[in-house]
Amino acid sequence: MASSRARQAISVSIAALVAIIVVGCAAGPDPDPSPTPRNAATSETASPVVPPPPSLPSLSDLPVGTVIATGTFDSRDVTGRIEIRSTERHNGMQITLSEVSPAPPEESTLELNSLPSSASDVEFAQAFSYFVYDVLQATSEQTLTTPGEGYGGFRTNDPGYLRTAVIYGTGGFGDVFATAALTWNLPNMNPSLQVTDAGKTEHARGAVTVAEDGTPLAYRVAAGDTLLAITARFGITGPQLGWLNPDRSASRLILADLTLNLSRENRGLRG
Image (cartoon, rainbow, N blue to C red; front, top):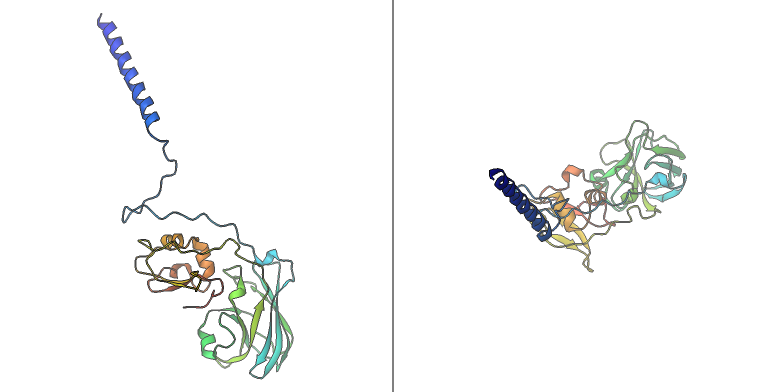
């Protein structure tokens, strides 16, 4: 008899357990396999993560020898031309100087500068630029390839923000020998980029500069901002923010009071 009661009690317990499981499954939603992350410091729900964009095209995706930029030296009593072509190297370029007169000084250097050709010598020297590391020869015709052996290439796939070719003489800081405004002929090298402003959030509270049509142009980083919140506010990713600011290292993108560029047209111009 005791054995029968024990079996009956066990049967009731199992039935009750099954009922609890069935009711729980029916009443509640399916568990979320990827719950929303939490901010450990504030216990607030973190900003949504923007999906990564497709891989960006490289200059080496263009047919080898494609002319991607041209310019004319027509200042400081120097004349001549510059032509930039794509190469097979990742984000590499071939730069040709032709008919440069007078010829550049021996061991002068060439850089591609982010400022327009109207900048002063001191402004050029202080601006963001990309140096061609091989020194120039004292000749009117010469070709250089970048990146040179042993040197890194661009950190960006789109050098179109480099607005002026500058030849520096050998006289030290700011000794500009000649300049040429560059005209770039590149396809859209970041086709998925679209910047919009969703408004201030707890960790993206800085001021925004906008164009007349409301398009965000620049953002001033506020104390307490985070990279995740800034990129989520503007609907972009960290790599896209870096692409818009090729003159800034990744560690300097979220310094308080720093102005970040959000415009394709203003890449490389520090606010």
